[in-house]
Length: 189
Image (tube, rainbow, N blue to C red):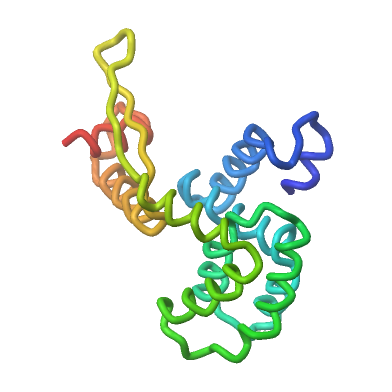
């Protein structure tokens, strides 16, 4: 769906924010999940198809589980050189089948060894991004509201998203607030 939509607009793959958000909104509506979760699923689907097709084949064949696939995507996502990424994809597709019983930490370490050999800078960038995580709150210019922005570990962001959905769903049927308003109010209380 993403490829189809992207082909019909003027955005480039690297800057396809509007297209990605629009597709995530459609996926969210179709699956009845939050847009954040749909965006995450879209990210992994794109990685399977565009960034790591050989690892995607291993995953599609059932030789690795979803957790392993997620770990591989996460550990390789800062590789920007297409040739380096293709080499890492090919090597991981061969080796990951031999690691079915590794813990997530050990799997990540094995993946990092391959990534470091191919692109040490990608590992450094990931560590910097993790170290730079934060949340900041700033006032909006009007209306007595503030904006919240932040960078969290992906697992923490998904957990927060699910908690907000859960809290937003606990109100009575006659609550006049939208789902998004209830999520915002749940975060504030």
